[in-house]
Figure (cartoon, rainbow, N blue to C red):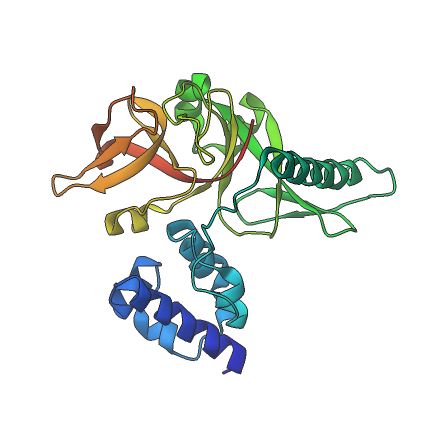
Length: 272
């Protein structure tokens, strides 16, 4: 077995121990048997599912540490204190870099290579390394129309427009775009999401639901029989219901039967 692959597997188990979860249970929660994980199956053949699920459930994991062993296990959450002048200067630099990066996408000389994963998501890979994913855009107001045909790819393409997001890698998962409604996930925090925001979500397979849901940076989109919601999933109860919680204190949490849920998407990017 490749030494680097073996070290990555060891770090995944170290992270499980760090989180206080048994190694076998941790790997099973990622959708893989512990025996296969410890076997000679190369990580390169399972990384799209295993690592994507790892990132979905534990977005705080430091990928630099996972791949190379450098740095801490978790991403730094420390916040540097700036005075107003420093803060404005830092923001201006970041905004300038972002505008410059986005402008490259409209350079006539930037002819992208177009790839498509097994779930039908298109990726546009540009010569400068920029990657964009194209996904169907599902407005929350169009929830009923989506539920009627969400299993029919051809009808979906006729019914809904598309949108793109810049991403840092090509994933094998099923991705959709959403346009939110309401301010239940907005309380003015850095990771909060206001009404009208565009969101990129990666579907969480139903086989993973019974393992519970961890806190995430941007929450989940839950599509059920009676509605579509952008919420945090804060509890999976013994009665089979999940608790959907808001980040806006004016919006109350409520329980919803997991059996009445069609799909759950982990929100991984936002634009507003």
